[in-house]
Image (cartoon, rainbow, N blue to C red):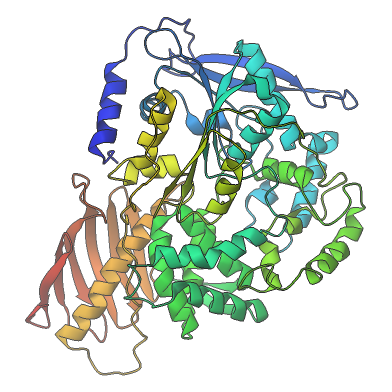
Length: 610
């Protein structure tokens, strides 16, 4: 997918044109990679020496294409569980072009944190494939048992000292820290522990060191306002109150979960159960998937009106596309880090068997309004329910209480980021006299990568570059256009045996096409995209820029078959599609429809439509 902003595209061209022979030493690092310098840094498993053993950290270092480096930028991925070397992949041309444009003249450094990627990957298969909070604490406990005596040594404090070891091994005095999501917490913790070695920081999707809240209560409180802002001018065809719909449906299912059968691509059905915390988690996931974000207003509104089908289907699909390999994000390392860090409502050295009761009592004692408009069931969105069976110590890992350095800091926040709300970035920036905050309306979690590909203004990307070269960044970003526009309301299930006329068939077929385009983008975000079923019938198969439809239907009476293709040469947002589909179904006026851009027309029942 091409970069969209003319200013941003110019930055990419400049970065590529600046290439040439590197003045730094070069060593082959993987197949065909001759400019990335690979280093192994060996660190103690337990720095106190009580538990023997070492971990070998896999480090990638990429000098700038020409000239003497201005300094070094450490790229720190999120999770916790993403290996930074694996995630940023300094052997990838696309990655290098972007990050050399962001940090011109700097050496780029990325290493896999202990327990991730090529640095002693923790892989706990049961935890890796779990899709609901139910029983995850037992899976986490089993994961800890598989790690063994080293399980307590994967907390943020350990990651901080690993970062310091890598800095020291590579011979850099002061470094720039670029953190994303959990990577911002690690960057801030490092800055507190080793303030004299920090030159400046760029914090993308900020997680303050005091978070995450054990119940994610801060996330629940911020959610309705974020959803209202998202739908300010865009969801009226589906609902007049997206936030109210989410609150109403989540609270209803918090009291009594919904159960139903969801159609699968093989034609069979799969039973699914969705509770209140599941609704909240599903909505949060939309800040990383713009197809899901486009689907949710219509699906949640249908659920509020009593039709659970579209929302249960989204729940099943979201769970399936969330199954990712440990090499990309280790849930074993995630648990080992967050369960060591806390904070939790129990003493760190308490017996695991006693914690469930302590957690239940602590949640019951929370004051009214802790979760905003949601009930106390929302506590299961947080990490406490994951970690209550983790072997002692669980929680209570103190980070350095040292003062933060007075260095330039740029924080980036997406207006649609629900897992790290903007309030966290505001609280962090308030601690830095030289701090600046850029909020990009319409962008979700992980601002820079989303902005680079989907923001015609390139506002966040340009802000980072300006910050790094000493120019005042623009902190007033325009709203980013939708990749896929929010859907109109789902068609209601037909309760008649009467054939629909051409106009009625056209209305349902158009909604089906638009929903299929949103589902194509939703399903395309899976590590390996696979076919998905329609709400009522058929399949959609994402193949690159194409969505292939076979009797795909939102209601039993109208189906579409054919292929639609996103116009990869168009810079327009929302995405532009073209193609032809055949309309069928037992109650439809049959015919064909053609789509060119936003226009859909054709012949149904022998009549031209629309």
